[in-house]
Length: 162
Image (cartoon, rainbow, N blue to C red; front, top):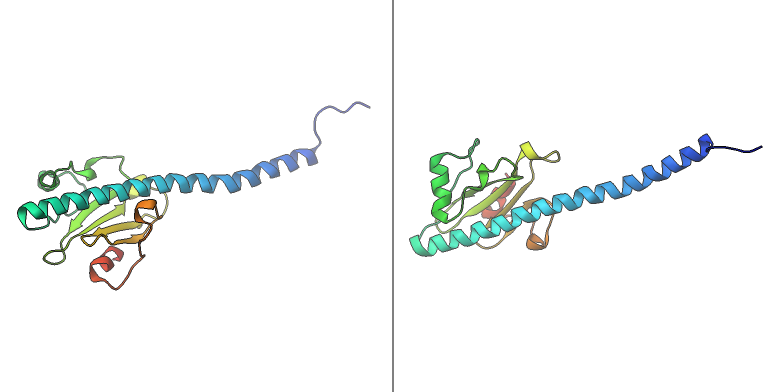
């Protein structure tokens, strides 16, 4: 007798194999996407740090730039433009919100906090860079920030964890 098609067992085995392959491949794909976004934030933190150092060498002070949603006020835009960069918080498709604090004279801390509007994972993810070029936060590591510490006793770095 000639048999047409597949048996139910054969179909279940194929579907199970496809499910196992998808379960191993999809998390890696999403992790690569998140690494790209974290890398973008690392690059922006580095650029802001360089601009802060340049502004400090000209003016003798670091510039504090708060992030107050919704972003894009004229005052906030003027602070960013004073550093020589367009306000990164006005892009509606951004993955991170950026702010610069000056906890003490001669110090600054740049904080990138996950923008919950464009993120479906842990919305509290933070990445920070200070004037000593110390990275900190709870984020996916990228080549730019691979020497980072999650949180440490340095008060300037600890501010990132709060």
